[in-house]
Structure formats: C-alpha cells, structure tokens
Image 1 (tube, rainbow, N blue to C red):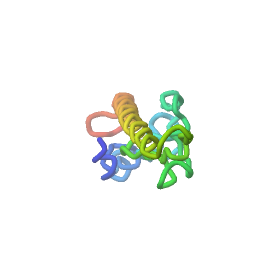
Image 2 (tube, one colour; image 1 turned 180 degrees about the horizontal axis):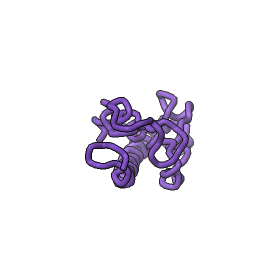
Image 3 (tube, rainbow, N blue to C red; image 1 turned 45 degrees about the vertical axis):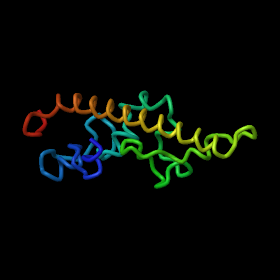
Image 4 (cartoon, rainbow, N blue to C red; image 1 turned 60 degrees about the horizontal axis):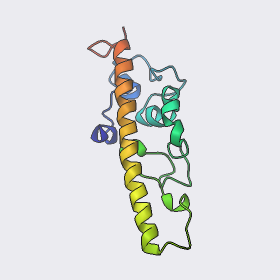
Length: 136
C-alpha cells in the first residue's frame, strides 16, 4: 500500500477523475473536499473517531511533522523529542532509547491504522463503484 500512496496509484477520486472514470474529485464518503490519500488518512470525517485516540499525532501540526503535515500513512513518524519530557534521572542514552522505542511503537500502530482505514475505504467505495470504476 505504501508504494501505491507514494506513486499516487491509490484509486482515490482525484486519480479516477483524471482517468475519466469518475465525474468529479469529491470525497466519496460525503466530505466537501477533494479525495486524495492525504484527505482520506488525515482529514476525512468518516475516520475521525478512529484517529481520535491520538488526534494530536494524526493531524497536520507544523511543530510535530518535519514536512509540516501528517504523513503517518506513509510510515513517517513525527518529531517526538518535543513531546517527551526530559527527566533528570535519565541519561542521554536512556532518553534516546526511550524515543527510539516510542517511535517504533508509533510506526507500527500508525501503519495498522492506515491499513484499517484503507481497507474500510475500499469496502465502502466498492459499493458505489462497479468493476469498470463507474458510479452505480
């Protein structure tokens, strides 16, 4: 899935519209937005509840994300150094290990969330599209 996101091959409305398979680029989940990968994984209202448990990390926050927008669905991780408090009892090495382990857990969890969102999105949009990609 990550390779398809990076190469813009996910069958989102913006891609299907450019291939003349859909009449417009609107989100198929009912949002008033262009449906692209970033919209589905970060902004789509359909998945707000799924992202709610760690909303701070799944939203576009310039202070967290190196590219200033959430890219968790690509396997990227935010800058956790600002989120984790430094403790006087921890050595620099121990703090670095803590950040590393937190980042690894974050990566695994975010990829699982992206997989769940993508699987659900495919299931929901399959109802509105026939085999040729045209709306029913």
